[in-house]
Length: 279
Image (cartoon, rainbow, N blue to C red; front, side, top):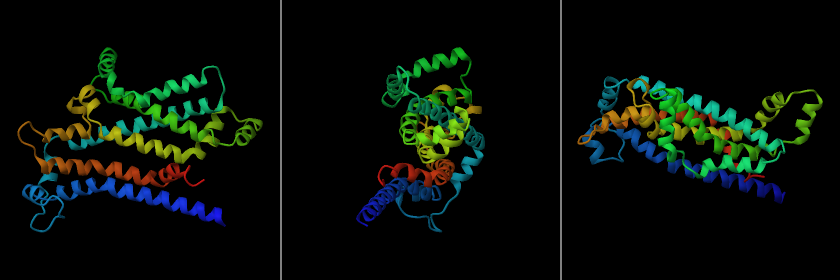
């Protein structure tokens, strides 16, 4: 009984912490959204007030839809984000399975080498990356961004997933081998379903930096046809004048896909984050 109460208490505490963090994290989003529906004067005079009939204005959204190809930017960001997530989760899970399941010479060193990507920012290699993309003819293509973001997300994916995969029962995997399952079928049908919370955690933490990134789209894909939503929003920011209505409207529209994907992964995300806290 005491153990059950302790387990329940830790679970409630973990969920309370996550709820508090969510409220704090979403407050800036709330401010951006409410200000996107207000006139320019109201944005600066009452930034924390909700829109009223006197301050309500859709000029920002009208400007976004008229100026620039917003839907093309939106589509480019979706393609880059979804494709990068797919490759990060696929290759990251496969590498994590190999490192956690098989014992070979250099196993530890390989894990440490992959973990270096967490400690060393990929932006330090921007010049070398740009040279590689120029030599490969991939500048101003979505493929360049997908390759960079896949490389950027793999270290964290391998680090998180390998720890979860070590907890998968060896008896289950050995039973699959006895039944004649190949290593690929064991990986895809037995292991991956058991680490879905970890996969969702990796997806959320990988998705947000990719969607919000400005650096690599500006360096590798600044052409109009391949601009992402974050880079496309910069058209409303000038050296001397900034159209804040349009900027806030563009940011509000850009939040929607991330919010939807977060809601999709939220249940598995909470399970993945609290897995160690509720044991």
